[in-house]
Amino acid sequence: MFGDPTTNPKHWNTKAITELCENIMGGGTPSKSKPEYFEGTIPWVSPKDMKSLFILDSQDHITEDAVNNSSAKKIKSDSILMVIRSGILKHTLPVAMNKVEVTINQDMKVFIPSSEINPYYLLFYFTGIERDVLSGVRAVTADNIDFNQFKKRHVILPPKQMQDDFASFVQQIDKSKFAVQKSLEKTEILYKSLMQTYFG
Image 1 (cartoon, one colour):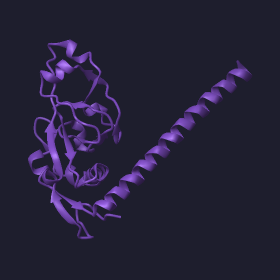
Image 2: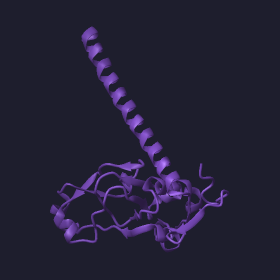
Image 3: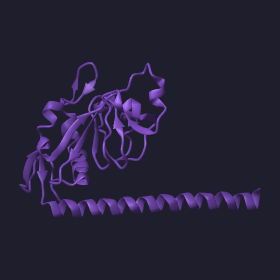
Image 4: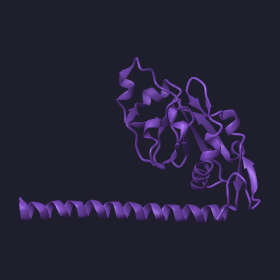
């Protein structure tokens, strides 16, 4: 539909990532000397949580006080999260969309898309350039992306209506996937119930 995102064979207009985002932010870690900071309910996303395209929760959570007293800031839903420093960058570029308000740690960045680009389109654009990005990952103290260079990259920009149509399609697929998963879970429960009835 959009063509190769790195070679742009369809000659779409392009714009730098910095021009297409309201804001690009880093994350932070509240003081570990205050364990009470990590007893809250606000998701604090780190690379270990970045295993799916949509983030609904995280393994660790922090408090409002932790947010107020650290560089970890609240990020509104439908933003795009990316791991920029981790050994996983040897082979994978973890990106995801947060479907709830979250905070992130310092190994990650968040892109808050402007009205000019659909967040679902930006998410899949980033997955589409994974190989190209990883080829430039530098091994210093940890594998990391040269983020100053990355955010200057130009994104191919099809008409907004096409981006929105693509986003609707992705959401429909995601709903179908969820419905199938629920159906499988119900089938599993029914199967176990039958086994108990006949063999219990």
